[in-house]
Image (spheres, one colour):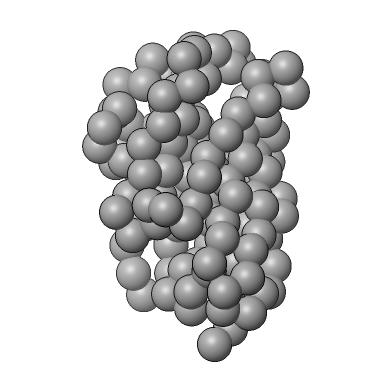
Length: 126
């Protein structure tokens, strides 16, 4: 059974940091790109960052470049999203997702992602 389980969300003040984790199981980790998406109330789901499990390449949305860092521990089938200098507009439910063969590489588009976690809430207070 494919599973993606996010953790690490919470409430933080503006300027603070959080590290999200995405633990994957039930599929060959190296065959996928893992992405982080977020959805704020009343807004569409937005691609935040992704990483290729096979070669470690990364991609970021402009809104988070320089503040967020994605990384992968392939031995643990886990992807992390380190979020620094958080802003109130980063408040959202954060989801991780898996894209078989990285077919959507360079797009950060949710339509290419095959499996999804249930999300973790991140709230940044001003």
